[in-house]
Length: 201
Image (cartoon, rainbow, N blue to C red; front, side, top):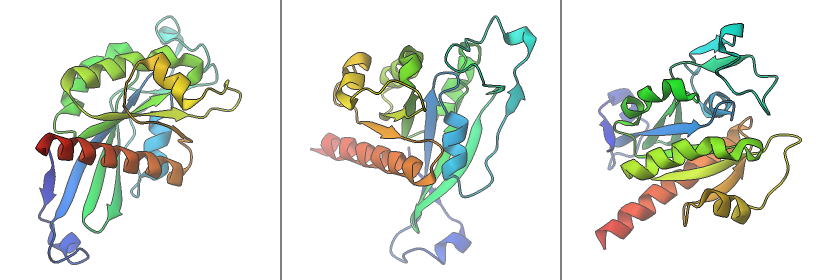
């Protein structure tokens, strides 16, 4: 689903022949994979965050193996916006990672044209639920391997085989860097457009 903005202020800066198209995209993945960082690095507005401190009450619920230094967690969503060009604006919704918050994913996915599934090679199995979710709902997605310091390096083909995602685009990223996150979003947009074009043939 694509949303078309009727904002006249935006229209002044866009092509007179084309409307401003606003698209909703999700950023998903396991707990501690970098979703909040990804949205924050690329958003042109101060991102909305719903992070809370991890407490002793959650120590037996949240698996901190591999992310022992993590002190906060998203309990609802992250939200940001990026203007790709004068006629295309992306609205980004980061999903919560823990399974106790997955009930919110259906609402967050409503109207989304695609998703980024962030992966951490130290905890690669944590992105399986997101892959299954988007495959089951027919929502196009790409896999972005977030490059954490100290993590063992794998080729993109090794990651593809491990996740069994067929021809889904798999690429490397550094969620801390705006340009890297932007390239992931552009890859997702291109993937969505290619699927739309293939469906028209």
